[in-house]
Amino acid sequence: MPIETLTSLHVAISLVGISSGLLLFIRMIAGRDVSAVSIVFLVTTAATTATGFLYPVSSAGVRHLVGVASLATLSVAVVSLYVFRLAGAWRAVYVIAALVALYFNCSAAVVQACRRLLPVAGDVEGDPQTYILFAQGALLVLFIVLGALVLRMPRERPQRTSAISPL
Image 1 (cartoon, rainbow, N blue to C red):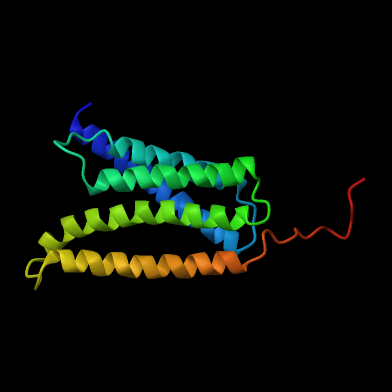
Image 2: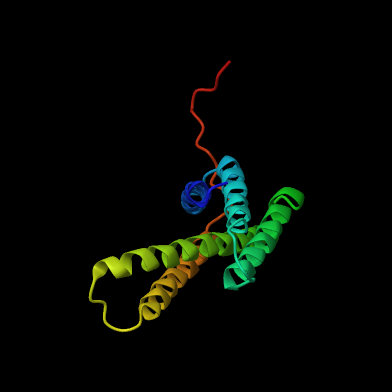
């Protein structure tokens, strides 16, 4: 597969994974059902990691370690969701695992965006790596707040039922 095609596929899958992950957490905060969006998030985030391993490299690096960590984290999320059905503490395990997997995906997107946008910005003072670290730190703080919000919410709010019941 040509590298351009791989990159387009990888980016498209990544964007679906990030979007579905954000939607997953918005629905959790709102107390809504997350079963369908969970499947999309878990599959596309795993596919993002898998396609990331297809890029040619001369040696393993940090991105490979993050990829392995992402797959391990996704495995924990899958087990907590589909084996333990989010019972008891497994809900918190799922929330944290899904949040970490989403953070890995978003963090990689931030790094790629900074690497492409900082040179376009022209006269950027200082080391570009400083800007990347700052952006990742801000993202981490945002994800910690998001996780705290979700963990404070009840599992799902009961759905309102109509006063008139169907026959």
